[in-house]
Amino acid sequence: MLDQSNVKMALLEAENARLKEDLRATEPRSRKKVKEPPNGKFVRIGDIVTAEEALQKPLKRRRVTARVDPTPAIEEAQEVIYHGLESLRRAEEM
Image (cartoon, helix red, strand yellow):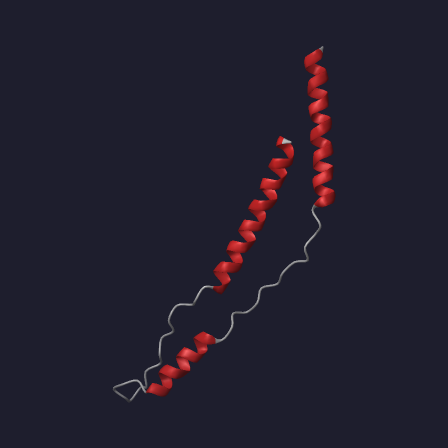
């Protein structure tokens, strides 16, 4: 029971880390500096609009690895833990 909760907690922590990374990728970007014209005193509104549009472009999507079914790994880990606990019980009985 305790081992299953440890495995479940590890899976949830990995899922939490993945979701945090996804959230970070969707956060708004910082401001973009508007290019000032070399001979002009003020920035034109068109330049400001261009800079804002550049910020609105979607982020490059990161590659997502194919999800692997964790069930076989969990079952294997449970078996290893079970056999380890059994060997400890036998050693304590001696």
